[in-house]
Structures are given as C-alpha cells and as structure tokens.
Image (cartoon, rainbow, N blue to C red; front, side):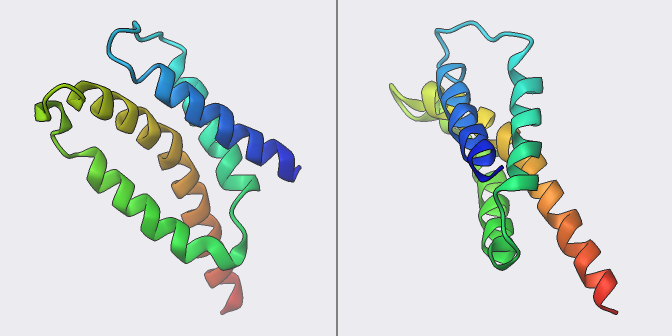
Length: 109
C-alpha cells in the first residue's frame, strides 16, 4: 500500500504540473482526479510522526497558493496554474491528516 501512496503523489504532481501550464486547456476531470489522489496521499503517505510537519507545510502551501503570481513576468502564469493545481492536490490530503490527528487526540483522552 505504501507504493500506492507514493505513486498517487507522483501522478498527482505530474498532472498538477502538466495541466497547470496555461497553454494546455483545462479539462473537467483534472480537479476531481487531483482530489482523489490527494485523499489517497492523506490516507496512505503520512505517518503519525509526520503529521505536524505535513500540516505546517500544507498551511504554507495554501497561503502561497493565494499569492498573485500571475504578475511575475514571463513565468507567472505557469507558476500560478501549477501552484493552484498543487493546492487542489494537497488540500484533501491535509484534511484527511488533520481529521486523523484530531481523532487520535480524542481517543487519547
């Protein structure tokens, strides 16, 4: 199962990059595929000792995703599209990891 999570991340990253390029037309299936891959990543890739680091990185990613990168000359559109897709990939993973962490905290009481 560990390999499934690793492959989900690699495939999600490749899809986020390819379909984040502005000259490639966005497909209706890209966002749902990224969300499903993100859920797989959240369930299979993040161990209990990685939770805090992962959630901090996810918060930083979401904040960076709100930056106006399209104003950067020449590469801004590329960066904006790719980062936007990467946020779509990692947000569901962050939700899964956060819920799992809260569940473990509630069980410990």
